[in-house]
Length: 127
Image (cartoon, rainbow, N blue to C red):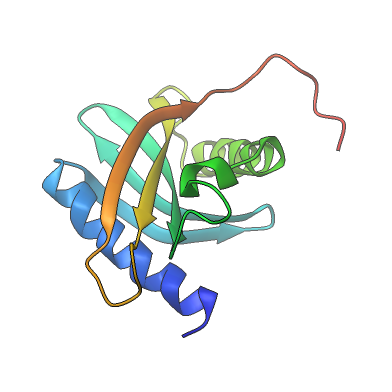
């Protein structure tokens, strides 16, 4: 299977996992001109923009380590545009990451939720 297929399978596991954690799923794969957010969900009174990272091994590091600063900046732009588009700028929001790891490709994955995985920073965006 391709990495893209494993990623979609990981997202499906993540959706079920988040629902069990009490999240209400609003969108899956929200897209606009800035890119794509894997999952938009509500956790109590907070809107969560969730990035899902799936890995078949730790060879290249933990899945959550793949959410580098450049990816964070893209997700922040996406989230801000989503909030503006939906007239939700007054709502609490955060960025979560769900790590999906397989010890081997035939096994059940281990899932980890990292709430508030990163925040808006004060650095100007120079991209």
